Image (cartoon, rainbow, N blue to C red; front, side, top):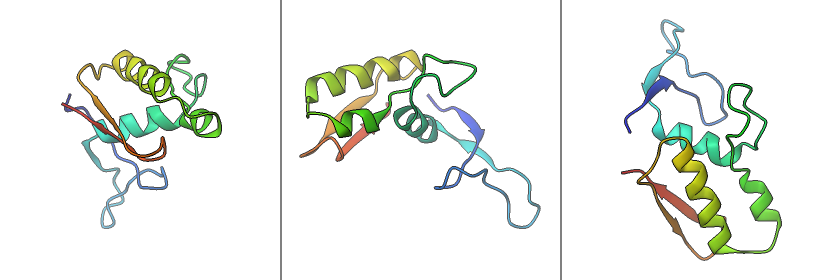
Length: 99
């Protein structure tokens, strides 16, 4: 999709240029997907229906079909219609490839 936004660090802090202390802007699709997967519904004031809440799936019984279906629905609602979900041996081992 090639979205750009203000970037975050691995700790979800705002990324700053170390010299000018300006916020860093750049490609943000992976960041958007990561935030979508880790956040729950009602955590985003502007879009309360957005959020996948992966921790809810990791705590419960392993249901790969429900996991993939719900994740695909959330990705499509955010505009990622051609995302490919690859699940390894467990739900904790998955990748999302954006096309």
